[in-house]
Amino acid sequence: MKIIRHIHELRDHLRGQNRAAFVPTMGSLHEGHLSLMRLARQYGDPVVASIFVNRLQFGPHEDFDKYPRTFEADIEKLEKEGVYILFAPTEKDLYPEPQDYRVDPPKDLGDILEGEFRPGFFKGVCTVVLKLFSCVQPNAAVFGKKDYQQLMIIRRMAQQFALPVEIIPAQTIRDADGLALSSRNGYLTSDERIEAPELYKILQQMQESIHLAQNPSQQILKNIEQAAKELIRARGWQPDYLAIRQQHNLLEPTPDQLAQNVPLVILAAAKLGKTRLIDNLEV
Ligand code: PAF
Image (cartoon, rainbow, N blue to C red; front, side, top):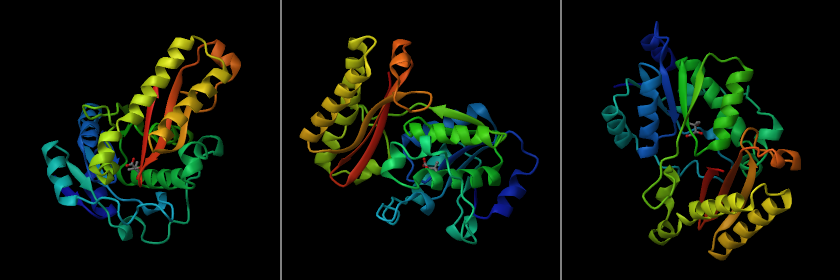
């Protein structure tokens, strides 16, 4: 595997390649990331991964400085997965001057859910992903469904800018107890790690309540959300949101849409101690 820091070097290596499959990451790689690399192999050759902890997507009080950085271990894992190039620019390489031009996703998608609780997050994500796409020029790029809203926003960005890249969604990988894999799971204390799978269990209970309600009304969905919030609070979590939304645009379903069985998704973000976890489940 070639480890490349500079954009011009990356371009030299990829010249003439028009089938690259790309997996952008912030490192601290776990089995979930490695499953993205395997999926990427089915969509192109060579597989290019990136590791870049993107300051632009962290709020002033978020964990940019303490975000886990495990570069040597990441390299070993990527080599085993047959990744051809690891693009790992420094901040100076990717942002040699202040990144004044930014990609601002539409408010109705970018400022809700994660965007409401992490202002500017999707602006930072879209800006770095567009820049990474411009560096790698992949034919396909893989993003995990665990970051459901991120995947949707990036897919729309690719459509709106007519980027010649196919966005491939990858299933969430979970530990045996149901906890979705995430680099932030490493922040959990051992007691919190035992509690953490409850978030997914609550999503499953909400899913079951929706199924049992058959054609639920808006009020029933609100009640299900409310009950889930109370349940998780009672377990010591601080929920940001537990929301039942339409799959295709993440907005609240209207009564008409509910009558027509519009596909729904439950999205959640909640803090356990100091660690903020997110998860989702399609209904
Ligand atoms: O999902 C992530 O790890 C990041 O948001 C991404 C897509 C690599 C952009 O920094």
